Length: 64
Image (cartoon, rainbow, N blue to C red; front, side, top):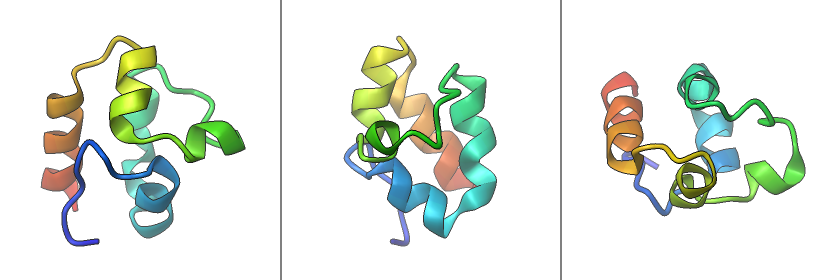
Protein backbone atom coordinates (compact mmCIF):
# COMPACT_ATOMS: atom_id res chain seq x y z
CA UNK A 1 0.00 0.00 0.00
CA UNK A 2 1.76 3.09 -1.22
CA UNK A 3 -1.24 5.38 -1.06
CA UNK A 4 -4.17 5.40 1.33
CA UNK A 5 -7.68 5.98 -0.05
CA UNK A 6 -11.08 6.38 1.55
CA UNK A 7 -11.63 2.69 0.78
CA UNK A 8 -8.52 1.58 2.68
CA UNK A 9 -9.19 -0.65 5.68
CA UNK A 10 -8.19 1.05 8.91
CA UNK A 11 -6.47 -2.06 10.30
CA UNK A 12 -4.32 -2.34 7.17
CA UNK A 13 -3.32 1.31 7.42
CA UNK A 14 -2.44 1.00 11.11
CA UNK A 15 -0.48 -2.21 10.58
CA UNK A 16 1.70 -0.63 7.91
CA UNK A 17 1.79 2.92 9.27
CA UNK A 18 1.24 2.76 13.06
CA UNK A 19 2.23 6.41 13.46
CA UNK A 20 -1.03 7.40 11.71
CA UNK A 21 -3.07 6.28 14.74
CA UNK A 22 -2.86 9.84 16.05
CA UNK A 23 -4.93 11.07 13.10
CA UNK A 24 -7.73 8.63 13.87
CA UNK A 25 -7.62 9.59 17.54
CA UNK A 26 -7.81 13.29 16.61
CA UNK A 27 -11.09 12.67 14.78
CA UNK A 28 -12.55 11.03 17.88
CA UNK A 29 -12.00 7.42 16.90
CA UNK A 30 -10.78 6.10 20.24
CA UNK A 31 -11.69 2.47 19.53
CA UNK A 32 -8.68 1.60 17.35
CA UNK A 33 -8.17 -1.73 19.11
CA UNK A 34 -11.72 -2.88 18.46
CA UNK A 35 -11.89 -5.58 15.75
CA UNK A 36 -14.96 -3.96 14.21
CA UNK A 37 -13.24 -0.58 13.92
CA UNK A 38 -10.10 -2.09 12.41
CA UNK A 39 -12.24 -3.73 9.71
CA UNK A 40 -13.94 -0.51 8.63
CA UNK A 41 -12.88 1.59 5.70
CA UNK A 42 -11.68 5.11 6.39
CA UNK A 43 -14.83 6.39 4.72
CA UNK A 44 -17.09 4.33 7.02
CA UNK A 45 -15.29 5.59 10.11
CA UNK A 46 -15.52 9.18 8.95
CA UNK A 47 -19.26 8.83 8.40
CA UNK A 48 -19.76 7.47 11.92
CA UNK A 49 -17.58 10.18 13.47
CA UNK A 50 -18.84 13.03 11.25
CA UNK A 51 -15.34 13.72 9.98
CA UNK A 52 -14.05 14.97 6.65
CA UNK A 53 -12.84 11.84 4.87
CA UNK A 54 -10.86 13.65 2.19
CA UNK A 55 -9.02 15.73 4.79
CA UNK A 56 -8.11 12.64 6.81
CA UNK A 57 -6.90 10.70 3.77
CA UNK A 58 -4.83 13.69 2.69
CA UNK A 59 -3.29 14.02 6.17
CA UNK A 60 -2.42 10.31 6.27
CA UNK A 61 -0.87 10.35 2.79
CA UNK A 62 1.21 13.38 3.71
CA UNK A 63 2.53 11.54 6.76
CA UNK A 64 3.47 8.36 4.95
